[in-house]
Length: 126
Image (cartoon, rainbow, N blue to C red; front, side, top):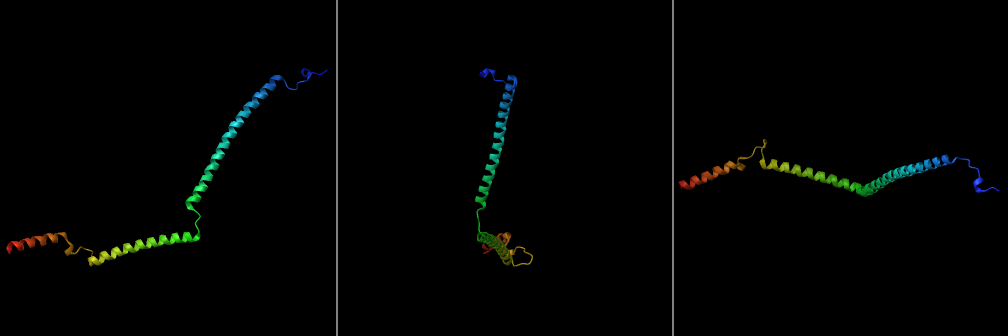
């Protein structure tokens, strides 16, 4: 009767081999590209996840009170520095006590030298 060898073939044997090899090449190409795109997508996902985690950790979850306290401390620091500089300026002015801010003769370094010469001359004469 009908044996396996008598079953009709609808495709020629050469065409079957060509299609099989073409499908193998396409399968390899598809696997390579899928893995390439998959790796890129996973890399982007990891970078985004790390960015979200690190930005959350860095900024923290501050409440409104913490933010207001931080701003208040900044303002106090700035005001303290401004007051310090203004006190230094007024103290300097009060020490000089002059309108022109010229140094006083009492603080002049050459006056000390002249005083020393006068003292030496007085000892020699006396």
